[in-house]
Length: 388
Image (cartoon, rainbow, N blue to C red; front, side):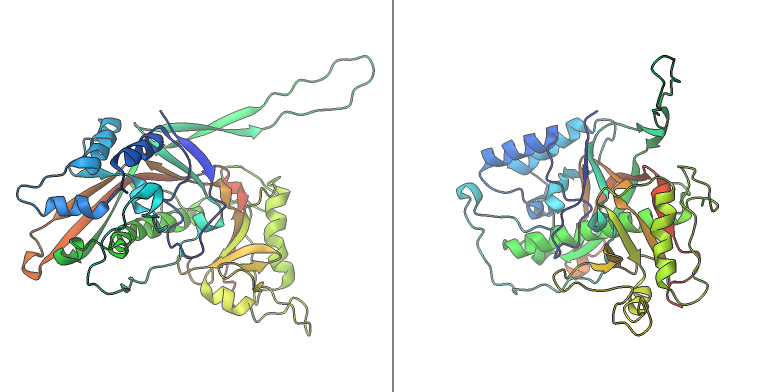
């Protein structure tokens, strides 16, 4: 089984999809790049959609080769539709001139397409670990729950051995599906803007749903368990499979209550690997931007640095607000402990008939994914509203 693990620590602030993009190499990724070089043009998602609109449906060339390669990796999955690479859903603009590729011909369509407004995703932007390119079924990952120890000894005398203790958790493929509606005429456009719009619209729906599950997932099959629904340690207890003890504001947030989040995590021996960060509901951000750390001094709980349009800062750590969180909710954590796992290939099915009288088609995309937490203890949440 081939897979890659990486920390998503570098993001394009303009990108609404930090969850599915990858710059790492897997067997398929290497093959895909070689296939793209041979084809002397970028992969086209709209070509796949156009193939469904033919009678009979027919796909050929580079896109057919990719579909066959992905199906060879997904024999147990037995997909009905076409499989497309996750890379085709990247929101980063493709460089269509790389390697001497010709520019796609611009047609007479508007320069801008108004996107559907979606919630801002959190986990990828704050540094979630992406495990992608998975094939096959379940994957079990080990986790250290007791580390080795060292002690000072006299010149002569035996020491006490202490081995690491391990447990494990299992990543299980779960099906997440989204759909979007577009006109047949839109699919037939050749402009790069249309190609990006179609890919982004499909990908954004999946990304927002994955991110929401990582925060709020109930754990009831088939939904993953989100961090807010994990069991919570009592104060002074540090079970790895439970969240750190909650912080209760009991009124307007104070500087002391803000500092308690990081204290709760570090007392559980969770250290900062660069992904410590805050997530909060927008009402919390609004309140904290007006709340001084010390009365009468112009330094506030939530501040903007001026050189970073995406992140605010709380106690020097990156902070994001999003409607993905329940009203008043605050979470502080080491976000690299969020594991977002995806299996290779996104299945695409096109319904030409349901909306045929409107000259529209429905595109359904299906991805196998799972969400796990390496150490839930690395997260601390508020027990009451941070926007009181």
